[in-house]
Image (tube, rainbow, N blue to C red; front, side, top):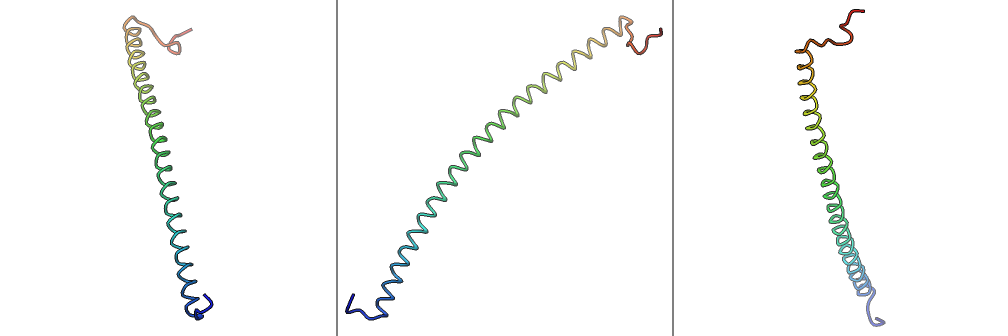
Length: 91
């Protein structure tokens, strides 16, 4: 570039800087897209785990409902047989 003018040299320099900047932006975009995909995949896994925990809690709730119903039936049977609560007994 010895025969180039200062303006031509600055133009060439700016073109090179622009090319480097474009390459950097492309790499940054590529990396952000990769990170975004990884993050989405991990959140999907976490959502699945929470969904599985929710299903387990629903099963536990159903079991408690069944036990409550069974205890209510036992209490009704005991009351029909004349049973009283310990607090209701006279000493």
